[in-house]
Length: 122
Image 1 (cartoon, rainbow, N blue to C red):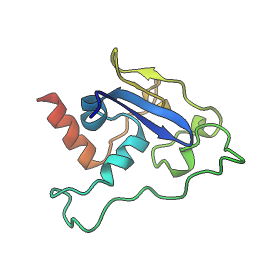
Image 2 (cartoon, rainbow, N blue to C red; image 1 turned 135 degrees about the vertical axis):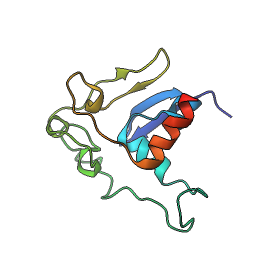
Image 3 (tube, rainbow, N blue to C red; image 1 turned 120 degrees about the vertical axis):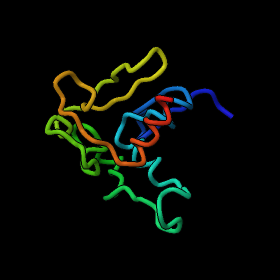
């Protein structure tokens, strides 16, 4: 039982917020991938789960920039150069992704994440 959740990748917190914010309004692509890998009666074949492509980075030789960038289908050029800062989404919700930076291109998240957002808006 928890009130808050922190999503970690390669030893760093990449998103933090209330349980409701993380599960129904996730904003980091890694959070999208994790939630997409959960079994659901709604995702067609319940035996087939979504996977995150690639492999985690070596922590003995961490990559430059955002450690998730090589596995992130939404990665921007800056992800290979600089780790993103935390962007504040609410008083309790923060995510470290350049997709939230001013001027970043708008991306369409996976369909299951869009459905979670629709539920959040209710």
